[in-house]
Length: 123
Image 1 (cartoon, rainbow, N blue to C red):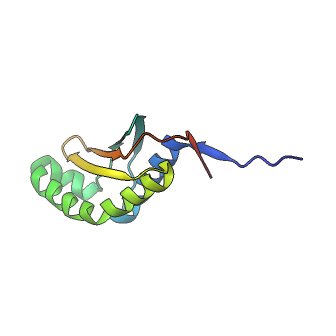
Image 2: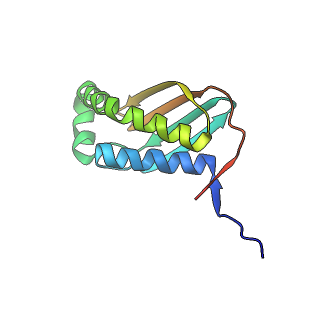
Image 3: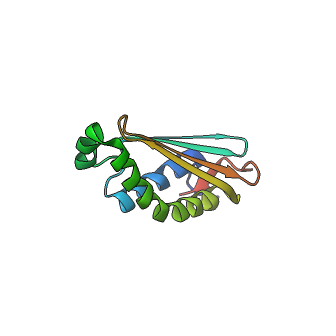
């Protein structure tokens, strides 16, 4: 009898990893996370990342919220890069991140050394 190892898609694995990292580093997981892979480019779109306090403050002073998030993100970035490398099996050669506190949207972009050769990963 052959055993089949359960797997999930690479985009699901990356979305899950980024959600968990945001929850751990910011105290709140994104409400919605979409991941796209195109060649050597991995893009994660996150919506609903702000805590209730940040969301209230972002309406009046989004620059302060963006600066706070940028400082915290500096601590998260190495873990996010590690997760993407582990899941894709490829080195991350560049990572960029940006946020729009007013819209409560964030983007994480990872450039890989080469396109991933697999489409799923073990659970």
